Image (cartoon, rainbow, N blue to C red; front, side, top):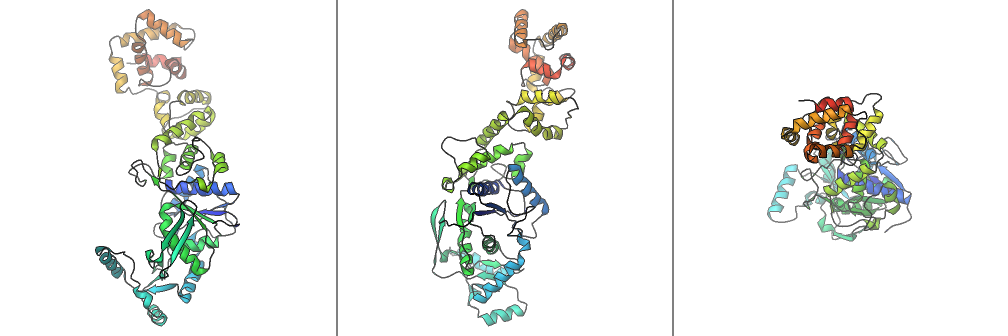
Length: 480
């Protein structure tokens, strides 16, 4: 299956949208294999869809890959010896191959109109037959085909699939996969516009860039016999194939927007740690062993083997992702976490003034065990950044409770009399006060929390007071 060729793998996204989670997982597996084997990871842009391509999409894809921690050895913004790395710049190569295919007979002109093709498809489906093209134009002699082309008649180029041939593909994940040529229609290799199709250019580019292993999603397995036949027609060396399992939603169906976010950019925007998403994606169809769940890029690379990729569908378990995110956030230093949180703090409209850096570190440390995403922090800690707070329903109920107002007045009086703020050994101080006033701790603490933060959650009350400072604490406790 393998040979002594240098390891060269590629990820080839289309710049027609954002980087999909499935594409990111494919890129990650390619990257890990290249790094493990001391090979090259190539980024190739499949931009033959001129109407849908955009620079914005390309920038988004590149930024998402970098955010995940993936770098490439050849490709956009890097260069390399096997370029160009955008298919739109490789038209001369495709045109030359198309001419060769017509001359040698493994490509032929098809003059059938789109209307005829559609009608044929509908008739075959109605008859419960395979809706393949009926090879009508394959029977045209070369002279007639040339004359019709020269007269200006529109045509596509189709690949002439051999009759009664078995196509055997040795796949590193699925083992030996067999296709019969009767399962493969005479597919369109070049459109009437002159633009080549995916299967045509993919085989050419993989050969031209000396790709040793094609690691991609299982959904591309149906394209593989077409690309193999294309390679054989040109006498090109075929790469090894590795078809990784589909990513499934928790409903067991193919991951879609209905079952969760599908674009990597969405996870970045919502404040997922990139290392956590990298870790989670690594587990979708791969495992280091039966126990290891949390690991970084170095551990993945050292353990990565194609034999460890599973063949069954991988469930995108959002609960597991949330747990992994929390683990990474808790393991982060307060300084590093603060840096990660700053963009989200600013996006929420909160300002951190000069000289408040140490205070912000303390705030972050107070919430480090409580947040699951970076984006959780501004909302949860908003009471510390705002001049006043909105009281939620539970907090409002606590403030309306009998004796709550009197409790707050007493707390203010006691705090004003304290030389230290907040009182040293606050837990003992507040417990003694609870016993002295004969008020349960819950009835004592709830109105304090409600006044300070507008909610009943948050850090310990003594910590809340310390973070607010004496002036703000007293002002809020006295607010009406």
